[in-house]
Image (tube, rainbow, N blue to C red; front, side, top):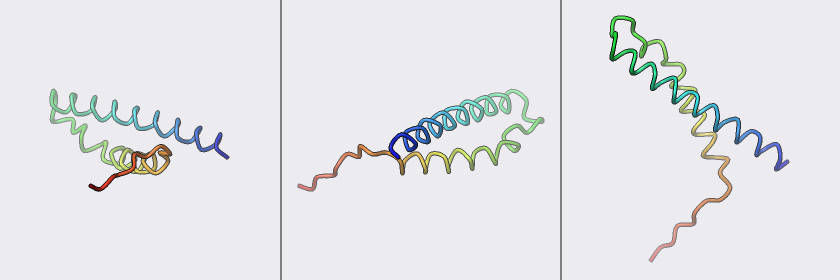
Length: 69
């Protein structure tokens, strides 16, 4: 079970990295040519990245404990 969880975590990490690069490239292209509306066409990809990062945060197993003083 741990093996499958680690595989899913690695896939989610790579998906987040790819989505981030695509969103960055679309932002640069939209800055260069705003009439092509690249940022408007990647809205679903931004939603995928947000969900991916949430699922990735849930799979972190080494959480740092919060100590109250």
